[in-house]
Image (cartoon, rainbow, N blue to C red):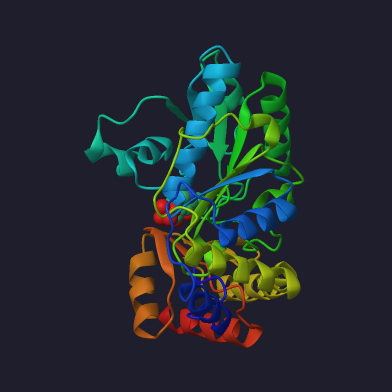
Length: 343
Ligand SMILES: Cc1ncc(COP(=O)(O)O)c(C=O)c1O
């Protein structure tokens, strides 16, 4: 979320300038900062249309509404969205249903209908789950919360071909993998595919609340009045988003992420070599995970927090590292040193 670090000057400046002009106009009107960010995102992604909200869950909700209307108007009323187990799509009721994790769902049933959760990285599961009710497949190009699970390149290529053949929308949840995180601007570029719809949030405005879904013109079925959000596309968030995107492009942040990400992976491999209780280290760019033989991630995490290293335990045996995209090799060495002493 703090993609360029904590409170970077370029975001403070963008917020200060914008706050002197306009905070949040009526969402019934366009505003220039939103148009500027929308056109920049389209130029940088190949999508044609953008809808802004304020969170990742809201972005995914919008994408699913688009898929439902697409199914209703173009696929004889199809409404089901196939999603994957161990995914994470947000905490609203529909996104809890989309998120294939029974632990997140159990206490909140009944959940909204229309989601089918299948195993990740398993194309035959998607083929089997596809029926004449299916309108879309939604997944993360790399599962973040699920433990930084990187699918086979062929899986996403086959999925792309399947969605095209069956006229299903392919929705990429890029909320964690987007905006340079994996070493390319968008995570799907790591796999040489193009989705039909993409959702982004988290790092897009460098720590200011924002979410968005983007789609190609040919799938643009939503009309004025179908969807809305009071704070969606507010000038403050969009001014911050434009400043972030400008910095990312002008400074080739994805290239930096690739380089320092390779260094991080080298250092994590060395850590694994000296700690036999680590069974795997994996990642792409600056999204990385350390997996343990036993459920010791929360214990290691609290030792890291005591030593000033902010990381996350996404399951009892997996730690996830997702630093600012501006991190240096020296800071990575310091972080891995803290991990070493915590272990
Ligand atoms: C892949 C993915 N999708 C959706 C979300 C939900 O975003 P938010 O917490 O902004 O609603 C997250 C948050 O971690 C995420 O990682």
